[in-house]
Image: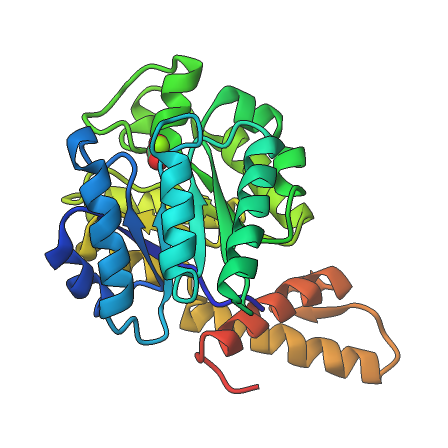
Length: 307
Ligand code: GLV
Ligand code: MG
């Protein structure tokens, strides 16, 4: 099982003092950002600061990633080379935004391979792809299967909305007030499509951030929907969002009890030569057990139960 990626704290690359603070946060992943939270006149400076932080901070076993600028800009290729060459032994993955085509992944994969050979790195630098355009979603199967470096597919809700011309319903455009405009969940199809492609290729699916960091109820709702649709985690854009996200993406005590009950009842049924059993008036069968086993394994992985 991959290390958990329940919460991914996104931190602006040019604001150095936030990096050390982030390293001590309870987020599973720290993502140092060179893209949209960094103004254009700070891009080169941010790259240097991020490289310095990667080297000087004790990341204490955390997963550390950096979001580069998209590969159709004058910054993206320089971010990729510099991060790989200077920080390839520390960085777990580069996060590539606006991935529109499997060629973006092939390009990054080749380039990173060259950097690894040049630097004699034995560990592989991962890739995370943000899907945030109509074309990216259309090409998702090829993107998801483009490289064994791929660790996650991330849904970039704000850029995706812009790409398809969807109406803006909140100040940030990052997943708020969606239900005020559409009966149901406006991004159900896009998110489910991303989850399907991710799981078909054995990588994680990650939901975009929730823009209003003063709205814990909205954040929880948004995280619960992503979790219900099969996502493994969600970005955070403020430290206050980390704990609520970790909670939603961890099995609760109630979930664990239910799984324990199902597994025990099924074992008993099997020893009596049956393939199905009843638990609290519900039928459980091999499919129920698969779900319960998955939850149990996740709980073990997160240290919530012993095997
Ligand atoms: C994230 O990058 C987004 O566009 O929502
Ligand atoms: Mg974006």
